[in-house]
Length: 161
Image (cartoon, rainbow, N blue to C red):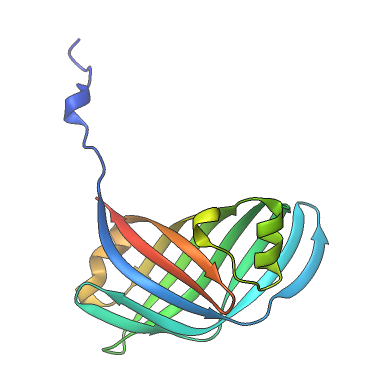
C-alpha cells in the first residue's frame, strides 16, 4: 500500500512540565438553574504561577464559568491573565472537568475542604501571549490536573509534546 501510514511513524505524545498555579477565588455568584444545569460564576481575584525559568502573578478580574451538570459532575471554563515578572501578559483559557461522589462535590460547592485524591479534576488550558520567551505556547496543546481548596485552585499544567 503506497500511502499506508505505519504505526511506528506516528509520534506518541509525552508530557513536559509547564507550570504550577495557585489561583485565588472569591465567593461564587449563583446564577441559578439554567437549561443545561446549575450556572455559577467564580471571580478570580489573584494568585501565582511558576514555571521553568519564569514566574508571574494571576491578575484579578478573571472568572471561572461553571456548569454543574448533575450533583457529581461539573464543567468549568476559567479565563484569566497572568502578568509575568517582566510585565508581559499570558492569557489563559482553561476548560476542565470535575467529578466525584455527589456529597463531596456538594461540599466543594459550599466552599468546604475535600481530599483532592477523591475528585477527578483534569483540564485543557489554552495559552496565548506576546511574550517572546514564551511565544512557543501559542502553538502547543496543554493538559493538567487540579485540586479545589476553599479559597484557591491549585493546578499543574503540562505541555503535550
